[in-house]
Image (cartoon, rainbow, N blue to C red; front, side, top):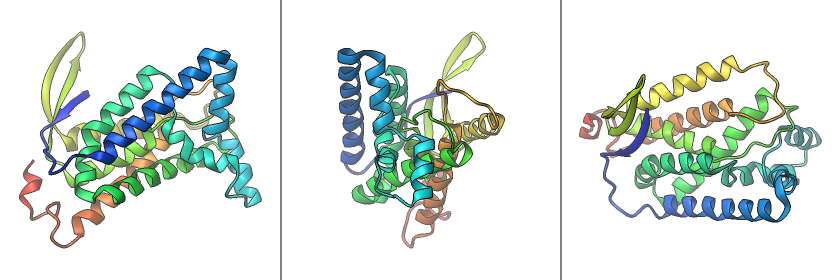
Length: 240
């Protein structure tokens, strides 16, 4: 299932979500420039410097150096992407689900939540493979946190999705709880199935998705419990 848009209006312009999308494309443009001028070796060095390298992060943590270049890469990785499909897919999810979470949390709290989701996601992946030298790049972990919050706060929201049925496809409106719940189950299955596997060429950081999503759900539950929030169980917003 590929989400295309949701039927969940916002009250104000999602300037932070738009800014994050713009920042990711600006950084991706820098990556393209580095690749064009220096080829794959230059791009690889750029991603190693500004991405999150588990081995380097583990070494910094052991040394107690929390301001090293490796630690800067934890935040830097949230704005880096590995290709056009990577960034376009991530930005689609951020646009569909980020605007509503920004609307509910507020602009600055959403920015803090998004970046925290990215940081938690990186450390979740580092925890599963602390000796890897492959840089972690992508906003997927931060977006996973946004998805987790959306699932809890707007479980009944209808998501227009492209659903593939073998060789056929159909446009269907799917409740967020089904779409995002299914996505999370896939991350769990693939994540635990990947434990013990070794690779030197990258891949999907499933535990970054899992860590970010769990953080997002926790924040979502906290939002629901706030007095006067329309996301509380008694609210009509839960009707979808």
